Length: 251
Image (cartoon, rainbow, N blue to C red; front, top):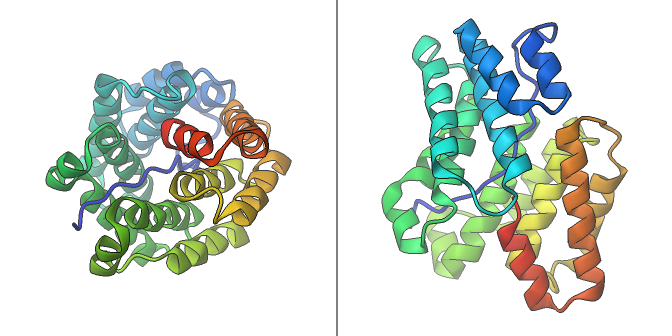
């Protein structure tokens, strides 16, 4: 029961130089080109950035079905970054995301056996031990707690020490540091909607409103805002079963 999976797109700033051509390509939304350019630099920073670019390409181009080969490429890039610097924060974050995406299409039993979720959680906890105020690690764990409650039920949550109160604490810690990050708000709202859109309607709406109000103008953040708008529209117009289905399919 200790291998439940959470996914959160972490739009974390990378240590890779923001003057690099790959950074310009990323900001322009050319994520696969950004990954190619960053990979060619072959440093821990650039490989972690390449992994993030690859994951962004997946999220933009495949909002529902995640191509396994693309995810495995991102995983390989993140592992390569960690081969060069085992404690690289961005490398650990991106590897955690890649492993969560690998587990996404698996059944609950398969996910338990894979170990992906447990490894992803431990990677993110290790980041927080080094960087306690990393907002993207807190965002990841907020979603992780909700997913354990959703997939494991009361028994699984008790076994894993997961709770909605902890999810809320991690979310608020994340937004205290990065209040204008649409992805953080979107993923928290999405996870709560996948759990129970009626019971958590107020918190979902608040997070979606914050995502929609976020001012970042990158193409990735714009996508997060668009998905927030789609979920809010469903929340206003569709039955709870449809809202939950939508929340469970979108990244």
